[in-house]
Image (cartoon, rainbow, N blue to C red):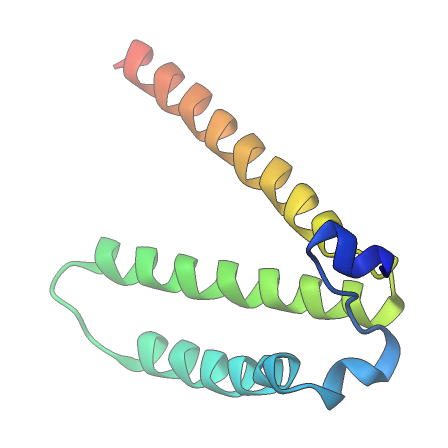
Length: 111
């Protein structure tokens, strides 16, 4: 039995072979539609600017995460293992939650 089949995962493409599979071709669509979202959000007038800021933040964050993941795939930093991507982004998400909680607590204590 092959190692990828034994572990239940499959190997990830690297280099420009990233663009030869359907799920990874969706990166291109994410770039196009992500740019359109930025244009539409930035040009719209909303009654509460804070809402527009949060929508823009989420859009920019997702675009940066997609770009980072695409670059990591292209340079082959994952080494062909699927668990690497899950592990790296799991730690990043956890770290961001902790940082957000700490700064929210600091802001709450100072008010």
